[in-house]
Amino acid sequence: MRKRFKAVEQIRLLLKDDEEARIYIGANGFVEALVEFLTSAVDEGDEKVVVGT
Image (cartoon, rainbow, N blue to C red; front, side):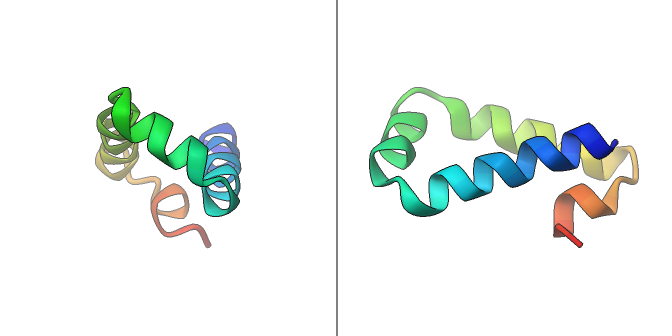
């Protein structure tokens, strides 16, 4: 579960400061994959991944 949290945090930091990356992932269907990833975390009860605490 810790690896999942680390992956989400890295994505968040990348997208925070990179407008081109945000546009790219939006145009290439990555948003849907990220939402699915987070949904699976919720289903598994991994709240730390979802809320980032």
